[in-house]
Image (cartoon, rainbow, N blue to C red; front, side, top):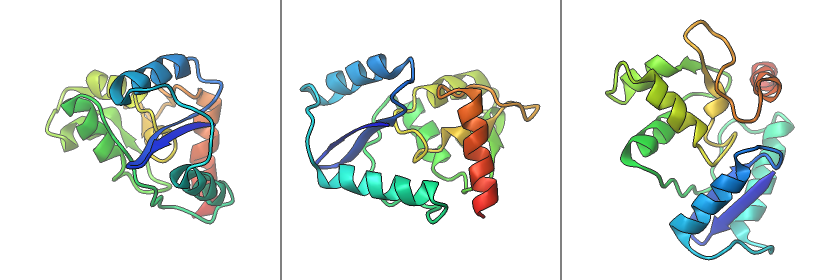
Length: 154
């Protein structure tokens, strides 16, 4: 995974093979200035540790500080995603209703796809209205793996 942090917290955590990664890196550069550089940072260390615990089945809640910046609508969607419990799922329309935007399932889906902090902001926990694995930038196989992992770790 590729991760970027500053002194406020984690800005990006994304699968290295995701097609949208170059655009997300450019967006982080535009939002926060300066090109990312390789190096050590306490929040990157914490991210590495917490993700390791998640994948080992020992962590269900992340404590890494997050820097969530987008449009007001995106930010509402991303903050609502953080409320979807480990091992549970929701659907796009329910997410829209919970942020006061009933009927905005497509817009919620777009905001979900623009999430720059994979796994930690759990966009993989959102399904299509029929329960299908739709709309995951990391791919359907990876989404299914994450959902299975959480179901088995509970």
